[in-house]
Each structure stands twice: as C-alpha cells, then as structure tokens.
Length: 90
Image (cartoon, rainbow, N blue to C red; front, top):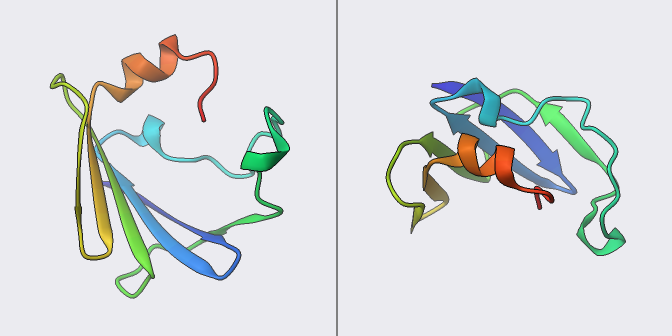
C-alpha cells in the first residue's frame, strides 16, 4: 500500500491506496473551482498509527462503494478511470 498523511486545520488524516496515482501529491496544484470548497492550508505530514482518522482508496473493477467504521473510511472502485473522465475532481 502507498501511504501519505495530511493535516487540515488541526485534523491529521492518513491516506492509503493500492495505487500511488490516487494519492495527493504535494504541493497541491492551486485550482480554484469554488472558494467554499477550499481550505486555507493543507500540510503534508508523516503517515503514522496515531492520526485522527484514515481514508483508504482501493482501485478495483467493482462498482464504486464505501464502508465506514470507527475512524476509518474505505472507498473501493474504478477510481483511475473515473478520475480521467471527470471534469471537476471535487
């Protein structure tokens, strides 16, 4: 698994994926689609076992799905294909 950590405001989130292309790359590209969806600062931090929450993104050929349990959410689906087809990645 490929792993990264981010900090938004005071929340520390771990992100993991079976495909490196699905992780955020820092510095983030500045792209303003709507000021309502922007955060002032997104900081790259080390991935660790004591973060506030975790997001797992699994590339698969199954229909998109998600599961939430405790402090972890898991998304599964053909996200590389969907990312290429999307005009707005929000």
